[in-house]
Image (cartoon, rainbow, N blue to C red; front, side, top):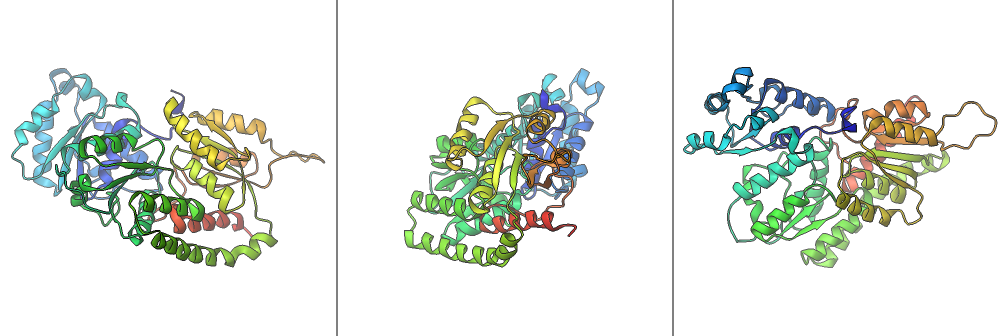
Length: 445
């Protein structure tokens, strides 16, 4: 349980709540003790770049708020009362009852309660999300599997060139909406229809139509794969797995992969890549003189989750020309997940310049790196990684200061930036990341 100190994720209920609240007009009903919903939403509203509560999120989320009496005698009647009140007061397209540790331990039968509401005009689903069922990422996967299996249209019909985007986890990726918007923009230029589920243009209909997709695109080597496997089993949809593409090199490869899988005219994808590259490098040209003259190349340390750490490392190495020395993945992963990440890492680390580290304990990350990257103490001759840039979460700010490094928060939790539509994926995201890095370097000049 090393990740209890300065955690980078919560329990399954937290992941479920952030996922549900990111869906348009889908509202969770929390069947748990009073503090569960408010504390978990507090962690995401502030820690995810001040994401906020959205539509009926945060303190507005309906909760049964069970007490000692309910724990002794059962909380089903309290849940029934809460659902009745919620249906009366809240306008939603779908409700999902989520459970906490205590209501699962005492054995409340949520499905039995929901049978009393089978004639409700608004559908109500339930999902077991007790903290002992896993972390936030398990909550994300549980919500999507429930929706795609129990709520999506049960049809064998497939819509040509309709794709679903999976693996980009709301709140755990503070830039999730901006990332999805950019991926959707690029895929639409290839002539595809795209279900992102979490962007502002998506509705409940996108969830219903998910089973009709021709391909599931999983932008993570660790998360969302179980959802894709479930969709393949239930609806016969094949899936593609890769890291979130950041910058021109990774994004061009991604677009070529998708065009091959969906048999899109090669000339079309090559033209798209040519146009996007031209636009990207026109912006980069404008800073190339100051970049070269001011010697802005840096050593880098990247600390983050399994979804963005390798993607950012690759961008720094292949597109920006920096020298990443350490990539630290902070998620709790099994051996198969680590194996998959290792394979992706080898592709970008052919010269073995960068060390890949798996560590969930924030203190041990700082201790390990500080022992290697020792601060300058005015010695006449001193070999160090300088200038150094740390890309991580707000938990890395003290470490960065201790070794004299510049820092940019790019992974959860982010407590010092407000994030609205910012994203780092694709071509636009690559430009955003360069811009943010240079902003830090130039601040105070």
